[in-house]
Image (cartoon, rainbow, N blue to C red; front, side, top):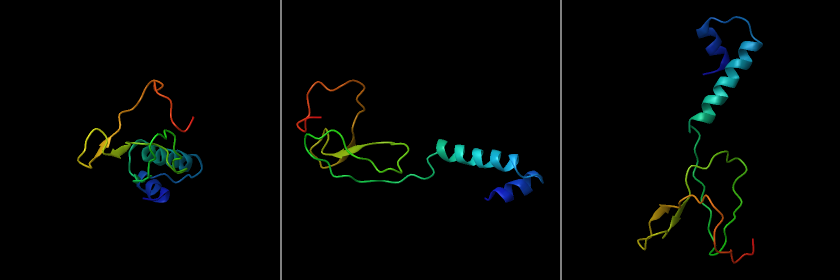
Length: 93
């Protein structure tokens, strides 16, 4: 639905501030609800902790790794770490 169609339905004839409010509301709705989700696959390397994510990623919903906590070659979610890890990475970061 375009901004003009929303204004017609609401009976608004003045543009300007109304248009900016409608655009702001549409943008906020798109950010709050995962309507534009996309799956990205990145090959991981043993001992490496930090990876570059796509620049267009604004929110990461889940990170899954194959053979994590299982040997069935299934993808499982990696739990979020709140504290600094005890062991140091082999890549020196």
